[in-house]
Length: 370
Image (cartoon, rainbow, N blue to C red; front, side, top):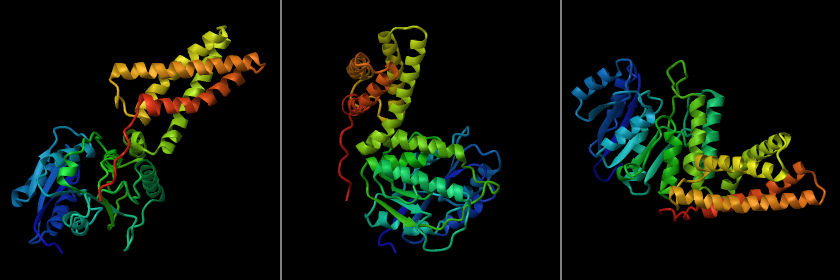
């Protein structure tokens, strides 16, 4: 199957897996042969059961196993970072200790890396050449929905972004600046792999999922975090139409804030100009915060002070446009509220263009590696 020898480093994040860890190692070690050597890095994330003791006992018996231990619980993403940093093999794979995934699949998944056809390989639970355990519809729907959104932002065509089985060239994964502590690792690493324009393969894998009662740790909060991570790590490089869709949400939220503040100031007796200016300042500040949180990269071209100055210039230009349009419409007989809504809608496109091309300009993405 392989025409030359290589070492596969397998990172095993472990939190309270004392019941499955030994069996996982037994099945993982069974994939070795004369060509495939293993380096197994068990990263204990401050387990509260006997997982660390079991791991150290296994390492004492098997030289291929190394144990790394966190002093406090930090999350799966942090455990993976620790493992990646300490890996020394030619390629690096992820193996959960709960055995939802079959280690034998790693032999197939690593082949495109060994043959220099890929830089990253995803193992998909939804490319199905064989039987699988049927689990919860809503969990599967969440996974597929997050994968669809990730594909929209990254321009990949994956079927399973959330899969555990991801294999990398060691130099690739060690070059990526990873930050997520928990399950946000999956959309983060997918986004950063796409931005590096690497060769990505996807292959079917077996999957024997656990239920929550059986020990599955991911929950709906992790799904919300994954959605945030898709935006946080992918949106700034997404195609312009997708960015504009996100900005519609940001702009809509800020337009609503603008309108509410305008109404509150007007009701309090402030004049037309004061109400417009006050509402606009509040909306502009909210817009900036949402932009750097969900859509654009902070400091991509300008320093902190320069970015704020450029942003203020764009805000002033659009603000002048807003005020001029509104005063013109009011003078023509339109109501202040209708005039304000019209001016806000007309300024939406200008706001997006100013932020995308002036305040937060991203260089164009390079070609995909072939």
